[in-house]
Length: 386
Image (cartoon, rainbow, N blue to C red; front, side, top):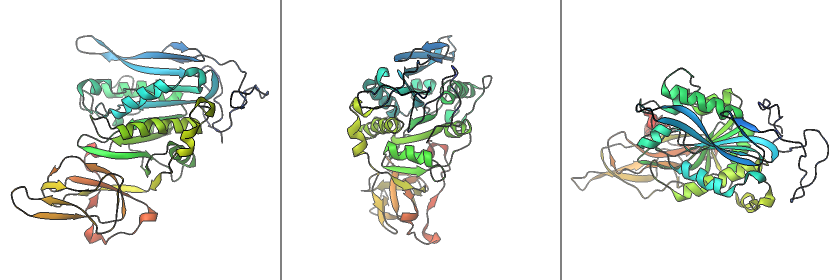
């Protein structure tokens, strides 16, 4: 299978995903793993006007804007331009400025990689929403959601300009991307991949290679990075794990491992680099067709023993909403069979507040009658993070 993508700006043909070969068609000398490697001379990778040579790693600052005090704001990008040809992939984090796990995932990933040993090019953007990151906020200073601002505009709002810069300089230069997210504040997500996989076998392959707990069929929302990337012919996986403004060690390790798995699948890394055991241990994700939030039937204090990743059955009691002033409580029952892929971390709830995010599929289709349903689509933008 080949990545059907345009040429690099420097004219170099992007290598095949599963079967990279020498551009000249001539036999290549074997590497340490016994694989054939290209003898073609690679061209520098140019981003932001800076040329990164093959086998070189550079930190490039892309100018965004200036603050009201005239202090410049830039978008830092780590460019690892491999010595050998291969695909180009980007990894981005903190499109929402309060989602921190991805920042740590990229930091740890970069510690393990050497541009000399990479086949292709890796572009890592630890913090896309620099403004939100500084203020510990999900949004930009004008309260716009960057992940609803794509494809953006070079002359539009701050959100539109940042979206345009990121899309043109990073996303459109790639063939594959992994966008790292967490839940919003007061929520936590099971490590999961969100993508459209049912009609896109190549995307499903990449999602399986990531090896998260679950893979959720998630439509691309208007203005989102995934929608803009798809329009540009770039396959993007959204990784969800953990909660806003908090580090989650399990989600961080799963993210580093998952990105490594995708790079192995695309042959951007060789098994000789010491990452071969990861492939053998990679979990097979549970495929989830849809999910929805189970909402509180009453106001009060929510108590549950259920954890993210737990399975639930139809009619099962998954928690109680207690009256804080009296010894009374209302049972909360699951209206369908599924897996808890997200939950609230805030026990104080009002009637209608989101409690548990339950994912399901055809294999888990045993469900209650419509009268028992208390699931609905998210009504708050904060509930949709990809």
